[in-house]
Image 1: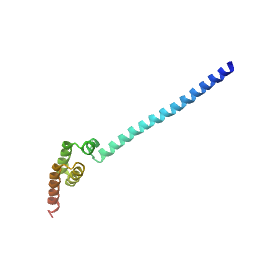
Image 2: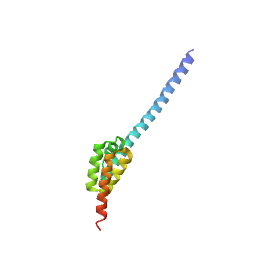
Image 3: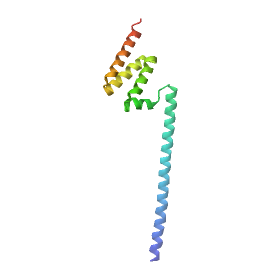
Image 4: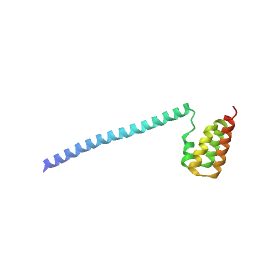
Length: 120
């Protein structure tokens, strides 16, 4: 009877050690993945800042949440600085939302591009 108890307790000890090692390996792998994803996010932000990209929160607000006020702010900025981008932004937003107000922006950007490229 005592032999069975010794064998059973030995099996329990070994299984606890094995499960402990497996948990430790899983925890370290999970921790490495979290650290790697944080590192990737930092690298993405550095790259975006280097290229002078707008924050992707703006992209999320405009295209995923379809926030018209932020779209309008971005359109006005692009209209002043980059007319082609304003035209593309307006077309994309119209295809996404089908709002009639955006048609005015498309027409405005189209006229601005016509003025710019017909000056020759």
